[in-house]
Length: 161
Ligand SMILES: CC(C)(COP(=O)(O)OP(=O)(O)OC[C@H]1O[C@@H](n2cnc3c(N)ncnc32)[C@H](O)[C@@H]1OP(=O)(O)O)[C@@H](O)C(=O)NCCC(=O)NCCS
Image (cartoon, rainbow, N blue to C red):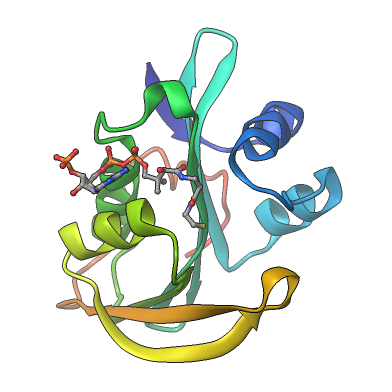
């Protein structure tokens, strides 16, 4: 199993993973448009020919946001999600706060974020229109540090300085 930067060649396999994880998964176009965004950093864990996990993380100025995280059911509870989030927060650098929204019923994800030190700061009523479910807004403050430019994230591929 290896972690790498998400690239176009994995879009179909990420879509397959998301199809297993969400009732309304991102489309191929949404995945492509998201990973192409200059302010989004995306990672995958690959096992053989399969994508086991995916993370899309947005950074605007010094504020980060978890756009989407998913781990294939058969690879869960092995620390993949936690590793990806810790890796991205430690590597991008220059972050002072990370915010995310999570469905109020999504206990695995809420536990994951709590295990990383995120705290609930607000509730958005009926944020998810599909089943009128509330979103919890969770946040974590970080000490700003320099980006780790030795990471594979940077190797001239993102063009993000
Ligand atoms: C939420 C999700 C990404 C977690 O991925 P994961 O790789 O299994 O999580 P990790 O193994 O890194 O878990 C780290 C910690 O989070 C907590 N946690 C994760 N899943 C949990 C669960 N099902 N129940 C309770 N705690 C859980 C635990 O504290 C865990 O540490 P531990 O295993 O040492 O107890 C995964 O369940 C998933 O893909 N769910 C469907 C998609 C989704 O809901 N994404 C989030 C919203 S965008």
